[in-house]
Length: 115
Length: 113
Image (cartoon, rainbow over all chains, first blue to last red; front, top):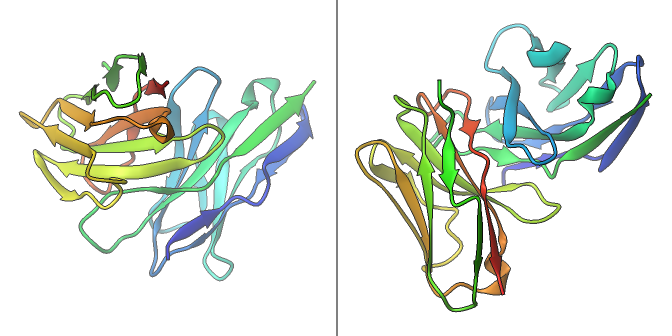
């Protein structure tokens, strides 16, 4: 079965420090990979995606993610965290095969950046 | 341009009643999706529309759930005979096509009492 795992319910980091939010997946073939962010009382916002090509993908708000095929991971990173980055982050995958665009989401990781 | 909009933003209903949730996608987006987000959980796929057809309904949890899309635009998700376990935030998303990133609406928070 297809699945996405975000092993950490919460990540705490000090402002200015680098952050990593982990994601691993179990999907046949080479999936499309996405990160979304959900701020309190706001909708889900697209951050970045991996389709093909360079394993390091750059997205909105200074975030980037690294695709690692051998480890089936797509960890979200940022070199220097901001307090305003505090939010709920979701990793999602889409199977390239089949006739559906449905996304399979992880359970989410709460990022808390402290001043 | 306008993003995905959903109405109502909040809906409280009594167990056993039917509810209709509406989604207005971004203009020109051919793909439309419904997801459900239970408290403290990730998003759960419900249904995918391409145009007015639904090639993937695999996420609908029971026959009490149905959805339609008309004019390759507005979509309605209907839940019949609501149950307490239906309480969740229902999110709609649209994308240019099946492979593009999805843009989400603000959601409808459904509470079944």
